[in-house]
Image 1 (spheres, rainbow, N blue to C red):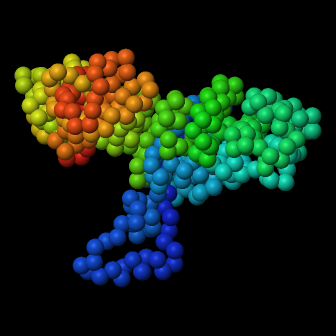
Image 2: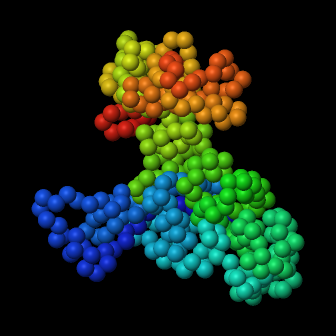
Image 3: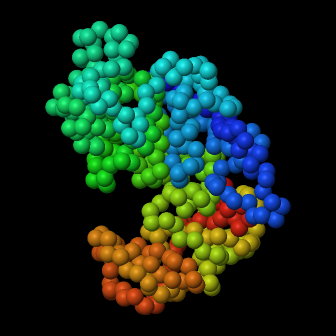
Amino acid sequence: MAEVQLKNIKKVYPFISGEQKKSKKKKKDEPEKKKSNLQITDEGVVAVQQFSLDIKDKEFIVLVGPSGCGKSTTLRMVAGLEEISGGELIIDGKVMNDVAPKDRDIAMVFQNYALYPHMTVYDNMAFSLKLRHTPKDEIDRKVREAAEILDITQYLERKPKALSGGQRQRVAIGRAIVRAPKVMLMDEPLSNLDAKLRNEMRAEIIKLRQRIDTTFMYVTHDQTEAMTLGDRIVIMKDGYIQQIGTPQEVFNHPSNLFVAGFIGMPVMNFFDAQLEEQNGKYFVDLNGYRVELSEDKEARLKAKGVKSQAITLGVRPDHTDVAKNGVSGVVEVAEMMGSSVHLHVNSNGRDVIIIVPTQDLKESYAIGDTIHFSFNGNVAHVFSKENDKNLEF
């Protein structure tokens, strides 16, 4: 239905009158109080900066990141609910910066449902079509088709207060899709639901995506949602894009320490280690445990001319194995998770998580046990100590 381009988008919230003057009254030696990680300039607080993204027709893009990173602000700029401070928003070849929200042919699903409490489910879903003076028979057809897709036909005559959270969110999605918008925007639509309902609604959104021809932009702070829903993921921090890629790309090849620590559950293990280059071969040395990196990693490091240096080594818990020889550590916690055991091991003052599948358990692990762990060269990620970037890319 639509291609969306964001070209060097920027959002600055100007200072409230007098706010900038107050901030200048700070005493010379007084330490600066950092209220947030967002950049503060003479113009104001920069919430989004240098945001560039090309979204293909019918693509499902997920913006993910911690609270305050600028993802919802970006979505609201696309919707027209926030003014764009700089850059261009283009939908289907037309610049939309100054186009009114109602004329952008987009629909938005909010976190808090935003349903009219005095209207029935049917009337909530039909409301936008009535405003467009759509014929009654067409309204009825579209509402009932959407209700069928979302399995809420039996609730059409109820009021929102008589529905569960998951049912209300289905109604909110139905209200959006009856308009057949070019772009569907979703701002953390599942965050108010419990874990079981979130899983169910994730599956419903995946099915919905197959049945309607539209382009999706979806905002979440939940990496599980990002990994399962998105064709591509945009990872944000402090108003900047950190990495754009498919779920597999950002998981296997994180561009920096932030992405490596944000994507993946449990979080990646990090170590202070040494990268050694010898005759075109690359090794990582962790407390005397030496592993040669895989050929593809060596090729990328060689192409970039990376030399021996101190690094931050990253290895995911599922790629860390209990072994007879390797790096030693002391078991502090053993969590039985059903299909696996998560061992929290103290190794040289660092908390290391090792995931052991229950079918591979050869012994039980007690608190205080000394064990050894190892990893292979194809799963080792090497990050610069200077700028936190992945040295391979």
